[in-house]
Length: 460
Image (tube, rainbow, N blue to C red; front, side, top):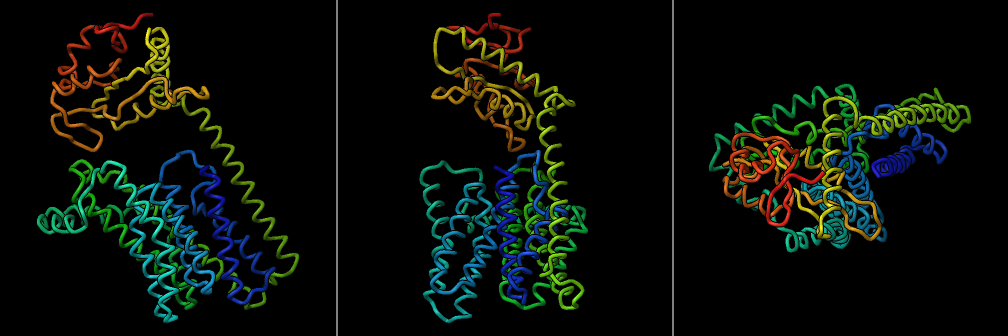
């Protein structure tokens, strides 16, 4: 799926580049050659990540969806009146899908509002601007409303007004958190692929210098989106998250890479088109010639072969890394433990799916995630998992971080009593004391199981 999304983003960028190249004066063949050149350039710089990523984290779909939204929304704002709704609804559906991926997509709304506003100021036709705004925003707003009505509230439930008031009431602390985050994000941005970032910024600058609206607006919207995104990120950490997240600046690289990768994709596209335009105007290369087309096809083919080799290496890594290193040993141990529990579950007299309380004190959810994966079943029509794992696994008198559940010892014991299996992966004195009545029934076993109303060691 990630590879398909990557290909779709590349294809959309190539279409956009081909359209811009046509506006710059290239004929159809030259514009097509330029579009293929942009694809090769982006693959060479790995602007949208490696072609076959081996870490399947959420920011990759975020990047691809944000690139698509920017291009489609700008294209909708440039379309003739009869085509605005068609382009707008496609961009709006992409925006709604991005919201389903991660709520951070809402930070695109203020930036995208610039497009119907610019359309109204340019054409003076309220209907066109209203159609663009409706098709862009209504799918996402409807989804947000449905989500709030059907899904329990998450970690941060305050309104923007509440967040602003909280920020002002704790100005000194808030500004300290904001300064720390901005410094960390700026340092990461300066160190992450700096040559590519500088080239992308140059491309954006050249696009703005050319004063073509279809090139300027993606840059304006991207930078407006960046400001809102960073403001929301900092406000969330001030208002919703605790000391651990702000002391460690947890996941700062993942937060910032989303913006940087979108910048790399659009900026490098503009830089390539500007360079091609500069070469064409000096008559160094005729982009319509078969020689130029063949040379560019050979270069693009070479980069595709290179990405194919890297993709094959990525597949091999995915297939073999479970047994490599300390993390690989952990994965295999979890896999063996889940297999033992599945074997025990089959010997039970009841067909109910066992509920397993995995205890991983001060963990960050890795063991729980791996256990849930290996508990998946593949029998058509059967249960999704052979074992159920609650999402709470680390406990303390207060929640020291977002991975920990605040619970008194008697509450931890009560949670364990609702389970069929207690699996102690990592214990500290607090959890050991709370679970002593259960763990004491099988002190030497890897886990403790409930048989009838009694906790015992599992049968072998």
